[in-house]
Image 1 (cartoon, rainbow, N blue to C red):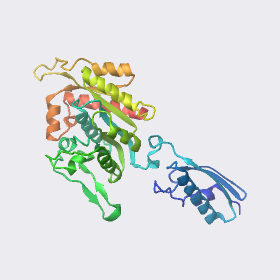
Image 2 (cartoon, rainbow, N blue to C red):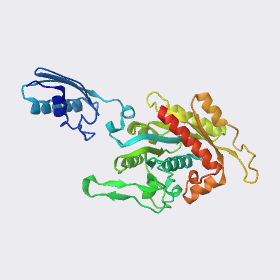
Image 3 (cartoon, helix red, strand yellow):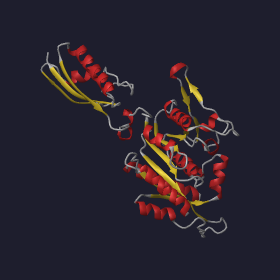
Image 4 (cartoon, rainbow, N blue to C red):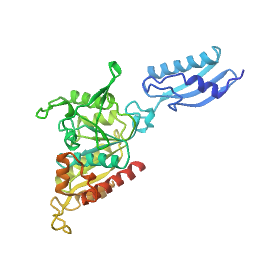
Length: 354
């Protein structure tokens, strides 16, 4: 009986990709299948580029083809590596395979409102009906438990034994995990780099996130070990840079953009958010006071040829909303909610184009 291409695919469906834990056919890793007489050939992609890993996958393919189609079948299997994680479809990723888009929120320096922007992005996306996760990767200064009014919550555990996973805490439709859930309120987190990196890794790999449209990651300020580990381990689809208009913040924002644009990192910078862009007193709604300078981040975005995603004013209620654990984007009809929603719309446009 003649062997067909479908016969080959059915046999290869019994080959499990070791790291991705699914069969290579459903993962879309098989291509160029040809069956001619008693000879079959095909091309397979492996998640790991190591020679021994690819050889093991090749042997598994040959075994299953001969098991189903006959021991005398000549099998020519070409196995090479998938591209880096950020360039793969979600289902072919080892980390967060059920997350469609992963966005980091970063800043060159602290105190510019990065976590506030990240919290409002997450809550605003969830309000629009998206499935959203949030990792507070600011290991030494976690703030998301307070900003989402879950300060006293503790993550649960799914199941028992070796396969159990941490269950994220949820509020306002956002699933979140923060190192702040595992430390006391007055406990300083004094960890060396390797320990912090391990904790961060576990927040992605040992958590039951489920299917998500967006995962947002609140990074620590600056450019350091955590950032390097993140871009090596997590397949980021883009990064949002937050800055105030003042020169000292812009100098560090410039470095932040530069880091993600390095050739060996090469993460798409979706754009810059100008936070604390101006102050408008409640009693003088038509007035704008440029306390930290005027349109500094806007000018930087133009200079670096990246998008200006939004200009968020200084509004007392944004600070108050963060302190009481209800993101300001949820305050419908207010100027701050309008500015934040415009930011979210621009992020959605850029992530679709990235």
